[in-house]
Length: 176
Length: 353
Image (cartoon, rainbow over all chains, first blue to last red; front, side, top):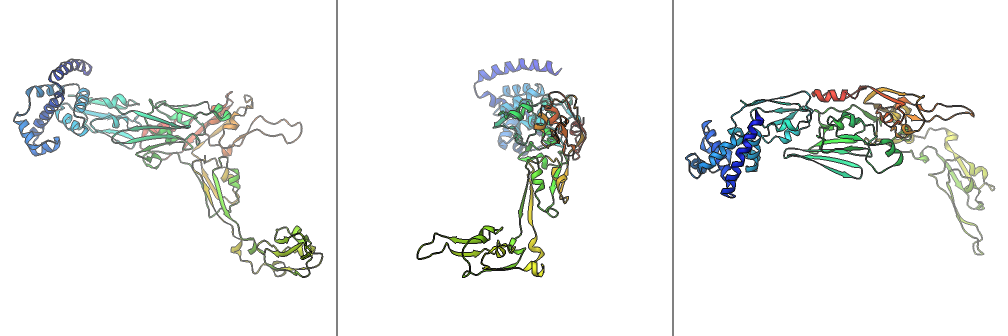
């Protein structure tokens, strides 16, 4: 099912690329603004104050306020950002990382805007090589006693760790 | 994406993986490698390949004993933990996994107790890896024998007999050509009392009885010799990089000062029917276990190959190089520190054959 979704998203992404092109070089920044807006809305909904949101996203408090009041932001950007959050987890994560070029903010945005929950299971065949931990853009993986441990709170189900694991020891469940 | 890089310097290999969180570095030192191929066997991703060890050892060709495929290597460190001679080492952020408790390592040691050691240097001579250095300070010879010696220079005719005969080279003369103003062959004669052992040979040999000498030890016994003056001091050093824990030092030590613990137990079998006495195993064996027997009398027919299994570390290098499969190395036990990782335990246990 994931594969099917990805095909659809490649199609959507093509549309987006054409949007980016017609709007010039500023478009990636607009999409980032859209993603930050979506994240800010989620965080406020989770009960955080505007001040806390500003700190987490490293923005001015006034900018957060403007965002939340729908100012300084085109609805078109929010629309594109919303499409991106609905990509398959790997595409959402890698595209967000490419747009932001900042590991910490990528983690926050992807964690906040991902609606699905994933559980990971590491089999005993894990050799603790750490390749998964080095690959995980969410920093959800740590090694303990030569075995990987995946923090479900941070896992966004991108499956990149599973793809690089040399011993096929990673199983990711969920996605609901 | 994180990708590995490889650096090759001479015959040494280094594979690196650097991420923002961690730097992993696997290094291979060719000089330490004994060509056993245990790394190749234990590698879970088949990234290591053992070279043509026999040819490398016997021709000295400029080639590393192993090759590491950096595309396949995941820098897990199993080769580093299993290498019986520490030729491979994985470091995480510059710290060796050999110093990290969670990583299992082979239990192998070689120690020489300086308390017990009498610094005879037998181990230094026997060590097949030249890993042992014994530094010793011998006692002062002049303190082990005492006496008195005096040469009456008026009687002495400078014949040089005493100088020639002195076994300790303790008598020194100032030779010169005689002239009309100084019609002698030597201007002076002296005894170096640090060298003189009061053997009295000079006294007995002097044709004109010019030497008065007495050995006090002979005349009065050794009452004035202090036991601490005859003490041999020293220290032992084992180069851990070169040591293969073969046990030669322990076996040869006359006072049980050397103790060796091997990581593997096993059996070494030689099929003398198949053996063609090519000597590849003799050349590769890091422990001088294998040798060609020599006949002791004319016409004696000796075996093709001799083994001294006491010194075998069951590394399997000989089995690898034997071209006719005449050697079988069985590992019945692998001794390693405990680990919580089942996969590591399984992989290390798999070295048993």
